[in-house]
Image (cartoon, rainbow, N blue to C red; front, side, top):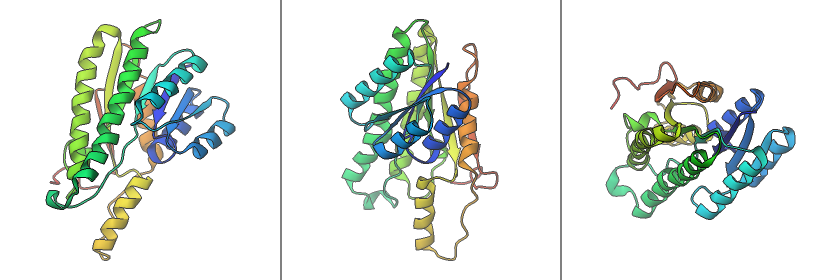
Length: 244
């Protein structure tokens, strides 16, 4: 049975991806800060393992990875998904501590998960595995007022490229999925803020979060000899091409 660890698995894209992989017959480790949703998922499916942990807590993450490998035998895939958006606005209105909070989760947290996954995949036998980082369309073109989030997601593209290069010797592939306007809690919060600023403005086009989840499954199911380096999946009519 193939195995995957998913961070940010309690809601949104993470939860949808966990459900998709469970339906596909994978053993799924669920990492998030909120224990209750993870435990509910684990109670509902025998192949789900609840591993409550904060991605910014290196010791807790190490324990979560160790517990999963002990239960599942190995780690085939990491979906490095957990992230926050942070405050919106021009840079001179963003408190420094809020910027640091976004970097702590979106960069440091993803670094910790990738580091643990890489180490496990390098040591296990047979060697190798796959790391899938959740980037964003903001890793390419920013939304207005998204300096914290956009900065963090550009960093993730650098992480993806470096892991791809450094992982070759150990049969560790790394790819990045850049998702646009999947209906999740994060997107709902952004739409609420936009509607508060301009009640008459039309809401941006969206897509079902399950469409993003199926894209992650496609990346994960590639043979070891192939890798989806970057995959962009977005609501068809959202203003991505040409925005900026």
